[in-house]
Image 1: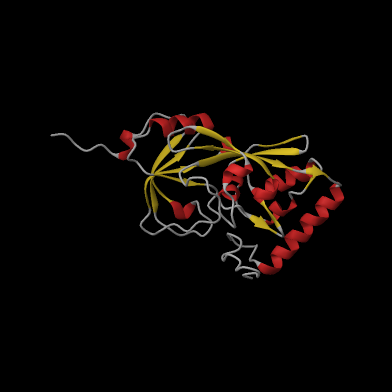
Image 2: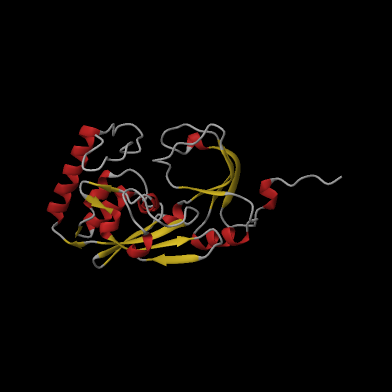
Length: 235
């Protein structure tokens, strides 16, 4: 008698790592939620591309960054949860631009910009989360949004095709972008401008101080919980 294959047995060979029945409460900041049927940590973009191109078409895929702005249902997540890791954390300054991997922490991006003497990216020091999440929701704070500083973004679609996107192709609106939900952001290039290091550091200190007055920064938090109503603040 034939037995039904498990999901793990149906997935393609990868260079990264598969894990079964992983509690997502252990990898999200709110510490709630059930398990991922399979958690996949790709080694790099090529590994992610190969997985998406070869996986069974009917297997659902959910992407997870650092888990800072995510509530997971108690029943868990069926299919494969993709969690990008170290292969997607690179941050490099190139002239007046800064290239950041999809799970580079926004705060680290701001620090690299400071070290490179690039102004205009200080607002990222007040946003908990990753660059991929910032692209997905057009993250913003203190009068600046990702759309204001983005030069280009790279994403992998559900079939493993790589797309390089301009800001105009991102379809940004307030806390949203128009890129299909199954596309996974792997990299972004941001525009900075030459600035004075002391001025940049001072602005980052102001942002951190203001955030400490309005959010519980000493515990895991996703930042602002509610969207701003038109013409006003939710906090």
